[in-house]
Length: 417
Image 1 (cartoon, rainbow, N blue to C red):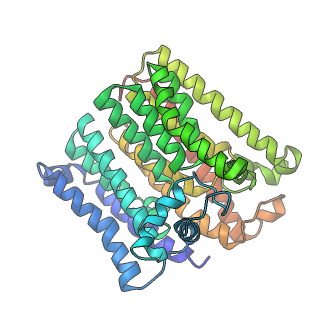
Image 2 (image 1 turned 120 degrees about the vertical axis):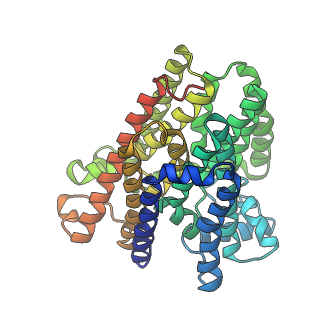
Image 3 (image 1 turned 180 degrees about the vertical axis):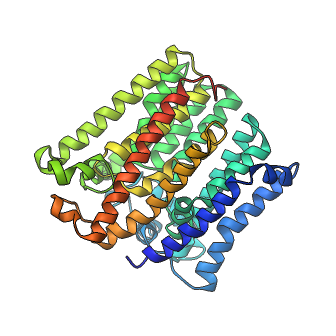
């Protein structure tokens, strides 16, 4: 709860900036015309690096949240220990070794947060350039501003140093390399790299790519080039310990459809955690395969279908997976802003802003209340619990809205490129 007031203040400030940008689009586009790259660089400095200087150098705060865990794992990795066998990590095998790199220069938790922000900025730069080629530089710059001013992205980057955005980074790199090479092999290679540097759930990108891409054998060869040597190393040095990240799904969290239904239907006890995980897994795989097959039959291009179905997959997981967290919005907020801002009205962007605010405020309340899982109606009668529960409902409602929007967009004629 200690972070609730600062995050509320940040949400208000960022929302004001977002709304100013939203209602001054044409003026901004005229201002930056022919100088988009310079303004893009300035926006990164203003929205990311100046806040870091203020918070961590001027005010002398140290990074908290998950970054402290990242630092613990990174120190262990830096000292030469083997992931999973010698120390626990719920992430892909190379994650802790990547986060250990800045520790060779400055062994402090803040150096890892800076690395996270640098990676986010790099991903945003790649996304900006990719969509500049599809639309225009000025519009792509404008979408970057909207993304940077969202409360959730600001908090999850500058304050929390979250890594979920890495998964979109792999997706946009695969889109970019396919745009340049038209070769499934290189997409497979990039996705294989994603499997060893991000999270287990990145595996859901693989069936989408396999169905949508031609030359499937080349895709599999690219995946195998990265995956087989990695698997051999993990098994040789650690046996089956590489399966440990899968256990993370056994921890019930919020918000998702099950955390909302549990006070009424006791789904955790009546259905069981393992069965809920199985429902999430089977439903997600089934839906993305059906969407991919339908897109393939409809001859929707890879560059349109792949990111949309991937975003849908992550939204659906946030909805159906009983271990999902609000932080997972960091996976898809960037592509949602870039892919839908031009096609949707103000209603969509306002809902995205409110969703971002809710995803910023719900976690500190939930963690501050010691991660409650409401078992009956009396549990949510406490005012602070009721506020948190309402935020859960709103977040899940927004996820449903995003899923419907993605389906509509996927099978419309727009964005087909």
